[in-house]
Image 1 (cartoon, rainbow, N blue to C red):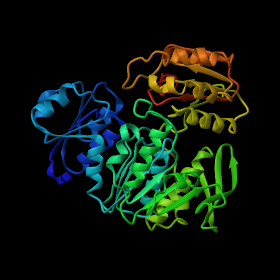
Image 2 (image 1 turned 120 degrees about the horizontal axis):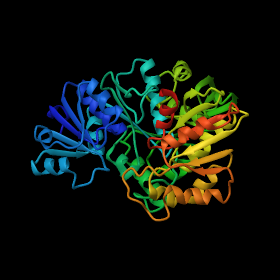
Image 3 (image 1 turned 120 degrees about the vertical axis):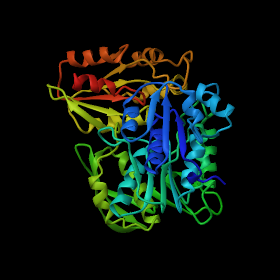
Image 4 (image 1 turned 60 degrees about the vertical axis):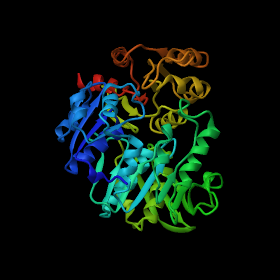
Length: 453
C-alpha cells in the first residue's frame, strides 16, 4: 500500500481549489517539492508561491515530467494537457479524494465531517477546540481563515480532521473512526439523480466507519442513517438528543445556549459568529470533541473565540451611509434562506441580496426552491451564473432565475457584472441596512471593488 513518504515531487492540477491548495501546503510543509497548476490566476497561487510551492497558471508538461505523483481534482477533464502527460509518462496519478484518503492513513484516527451545509464551519470549530487543547493533528478545512490565509493545521499525526465532501461521492474514499453527518439535502444534480440517490451515498459513507467507530449526527437523521452495528450519538434541539441545546438567546444575530449532555447540564456556550444554524454546528463539534476524549467544558473558550471562516457570513466593511456589506458562500436555497434570516435579526434596515448562481444544473433543478428562498429579502439582484465546471444548461441560467423571481418580487434586478453591481451599490440611498453578497463563485470581488478602490 502506498505511503505519503513514498513521494518527493508532487504536482497538483487545479491547485487553486480550496481543498487542493491546503493539501499542497501540507506537502510543502512536510518537506516535499511541490508544484501546482490552475486554469486561472488567483491570490491562492500567489500565497502558495509565498509558502514554497511553485504554483502557476496554465499548463507545463515539463513540470509533470519531474513529478513522482500527480494529484488532480474531479473537475479536471480527462483530456487535460497535464493529466494526459502524467498518464503517458506512467506517473502515479490520483484524484483528490484518493490522495485525501492517503493522507488520512498517515494518522492514527480520522474524523470526517459531512453534510450538505455547515461542514466547513463545523470542521473549523472542531479544529479550534483541538488546537486549544494541544491535540496533535492534521486539520484539512475547505475554507480560508478570515483575511484569506490558507487554513491548515499540521501539529502531529494522532488525528486527521477533514471535511468529507459528497460531490462526486468523494467522501466514499474515507474510512473514518468518527463520522459527522450534519444534514442531507439535494444538491449537485450533476452527480446525483435525486434526493434518494444522495441519501444512499451518505448511507454508504456511514457504512465506511471503522469497526468500533462512531457516528455523530443530527437527531432527525439517526433512524435513516444508523444501520445495524453502527454506534451513534445525536445532537439537536429535541428532548431526546444526546447533545442538546436549550435556553437559547441571541444578541444582534449572535447566539448563546446551554448544553445538556445525556440530559445533564454541562455549561453555557457563547458563539462569536452569527446565525442560529451555527448552534447545530457547534453541537456537532462538541460531540465529536467529546468522542475524541477532549474536555468539552474547556471547549467553551475555543468556541467563544472562534471567529469563523472566510466567506461564511463575513462582514467585509461598512459603506459611508452605515450599510454593512456581508459576504457568504451560500449557493443552495437553504443556505440563502439561512443567511437572510440571520441578517433579518441584525438590522431594522433593508436587506439587499446580490446572488451569483453556482452551476447551471443546480439552478435548473432547484429553480422553485431558489425563487422561494429570497422571500424575506427587500431587494434581490441576480448576477450571471458562475459556471464552474459546466456549460450552459437550457432553462438553468441566471437570467432564467431572474425571470422566475421577478414574477413574485417586484424589487428584483438583473445586473451583468461585478463593476456594474458595485456601481449600483454606491448609487443607492442607504438606510443602515445590510447588503448580502451570496454565492460560491467569485462574487466577493464586489466587496473588493467597493473597499479597495
